[in-house]
Amino acid sequence: MLQPSQFLKIVEHSGSAPSNLSFQSQAVVLLRQWRGVEPVLQEAVRFYRTQFHRHSEAFAYLFERGIRSAALIEEMRIGYAPGGCLRGWLTQLGHSLPALCQTGLVTEAGYDAYVRRIVFPLEGNLYGRSLSDSAPAHRFLPGAKGGLYLWERVQSYPEVILVEGLFDYAAVWQAGFQNVTCSLGAHLNTRQFRQLCDNPRTVYIAFDADTNGGGQQAAQSLAGRLREQGVNARRVFLPEGHDPNNFFVSGGTDQEFHALLEETCL
Image (cartoon, rainbow, N blue to C red; front, side, top):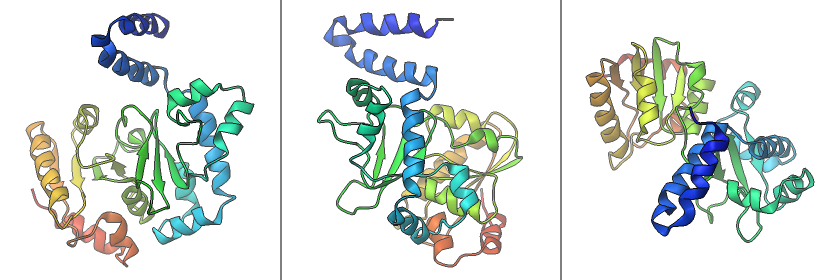
């Protein structure tokens, strides 16, 4: 098997011609994933977690979204990016500006990429949810979104609840359903799909009940693919216009959600 240093040489050589730029970009992403979360990302996560406890607007936003459990915040390692100070902190720790730009934490102009965002650490990436309506709601670092969220904590369960978003995950976990995972969107990548198929299990697909039907269409397609692999896939039908997060925020109870699980269909 190639070692990371050998792989890096291949990446560097691949940049000799414009036709190889796509491969080079993909290879850099793969190299980052191979090495795991780089030290600079770990430092950023620690910084954001510290900032979370210093900014009341972060607490207020989570409270509004129904996230009120200190254990959950610790479980998900939730942080807050106020903006304007991460670059200075990381450069004091010895990280160069080019390195910070390469990770996507800092823009080419030298500004923090995550500004006024609730931050969730992922596998080799970060998800940031904006508190401002004037900014794009969602932000990820360049690269793949990785596998299912915290899959190692739920893969041994015979029954798994799959939701689309991290706030959905938070609401379901907080309601007492700790056999939940998240695909960070309605369309799974190859690795996520294989994870669901790695053992015999029942998968409850609790995707958003969008008014345009997008979430349930994706759930129906995924359920069919899972059944082809021998997985017992069940679709959960939330009230129209609801996702798991606002189901609980609007007053839904754990008993009502459990009833929805029991009422699932193929």
